[in-house]
Image (cartoon, rainbow, N blue to C red):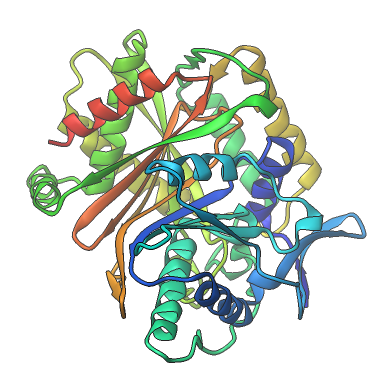
Length: 428
């Protein structure tokens, strides 16, 4: 079973292959309970049987990239580590995001199990190629994995459910799709007539292969989140609008960008509900796009005004541009993306502003038999230096889990911490 990569999958392939793993999806679960390597291997094997895409390799056939499903792709890629210090899961996550996938690796996803010998605390650190995954998929995957492990811990079977086929690329399933020429025309119009974003200079520099995606993690508690949601409703905006506004305002102020400035915010949008038929949450894959919006910040810009502007701009983009072409030229995408990012790299500039991926509130269980989830995060590798800083958010169990990613040494840890602190203050 095989199929060609779609438009967005091809963009993800280019980002990974040409920009040192940019776009790889990170998933982290911090747990309590009797989890063992044996349970994980059995549960992972069951999930791989269920999802054809988890048995697929990315192969070039007759000069064209395909997903090719294998009946027996070999052992699951699981590494086991005994805990040596409290922050180990953070360093392991950063190390894993620095390792590109290769065709020899097998299906492009892997896990690290960090356990506490003699204790009941553990972490799962998972990395997936963006061609086969998105944040919604990895969250559901983690929930299904823990459910299978919970059943095993109670003496049951790891059965993960009926087999699911390899779906077409998301562009083939969208209710509408522009032509390739129409898409190029739309992008050219935005480039020529749209507002030109203000570039943000790198703080430091290293070549692509020497950069490291770093993460800062924050959790907003149930009472604070409830107050924030109520305030968003009173201000006639959304949580996504507030998150976008807080990030671009905090980053612009901390970096000392001269005002007025036009700042870009790139929002990851799920396309599942725009497909016909709608793609359900049980399916694993890459069903997203990224929509850029631009905002003029001045010394007089008020936070809630900016939040409403972010909401309006994103709503307009979804209505008009959340669709992608079925046919396209990979060579054109390689040349265009490469030229844009390499030119910015030579100028030592972040040119795409900020990135936000908000999965919203997911109704996933907190307990799976004897296993309990304490924290869950997701994020992406950003080695290309396209974003100043990116934010990945999910609301679970009444709390909001935030992962902020930046590239070292393009930004210092001190600056990243200052941006995150300013972001959290803006939402108080």
